[in-house]
Length: 60
Image (tube, rainbow, N blue to C red; front, side, top):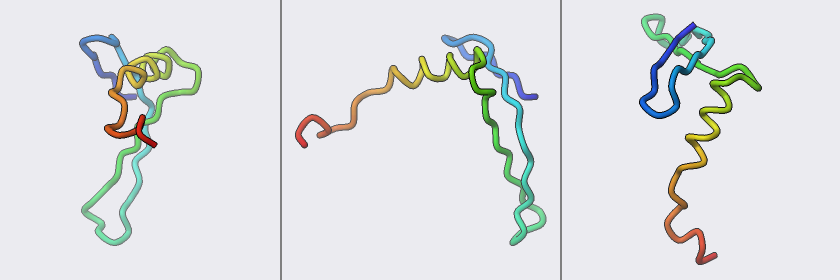
């Protein structure tokens, strides 16, 4: 379990998986994914809602 203290969202908790990279045994890939419906998932959704709109998106 990885815990990150975000300055706005507070404590975020992520379970993770470690995946081997077969092309290079010295490399690994860590995938952090919040549990669905958890406080961390809700806090990440809130942070994601604060993003700026894409430039030119309103011109389509």
